[in-house]
Image 1 (cartoon, rainbow, N blue to C red):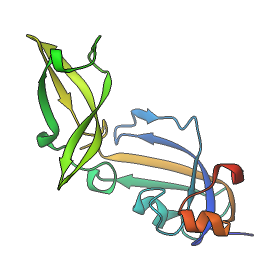
Image 2 (tube, one colour; image 1 turned 60 degrees about the horizontal axis):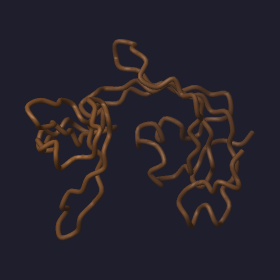
Image 3 (spheres, rainbow, N blue to C red; image 1 turned 180 degrees about the horizontal axis):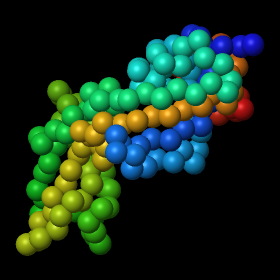
Length: 160
């Protein structure tokens, strides 16, 4: 029986909840990643899956630093509404830019509040600062192609 090791393409069905059991992601789409340190899944999940086979299930508790990071208040911004796309609504995500060293990088902001001609934009991932419980079941494993290993990820035309 084939097991999960470096340079295998792994397919998982999964759910993601908070520690109180509140469902955050019911895994409508499977996770398909290249195993072996290619950043396709969080490190603790990849470590738990090492050596597993089709049908095996893992439960991994992730602290914020193992997943989407701690909440960073420096990623909050207040912007004039006139400088933002319209119509703007709370909960909407908009793309912005942030200076990273000498380069500008795209970042997505969630509009969290609109008042007095201004909007509060939050550049944190929606799950930042949240502990998570990942439950994943291995549904398929196959050897990666040379092209996938070079790319560091599964190739769309080779998916299971």
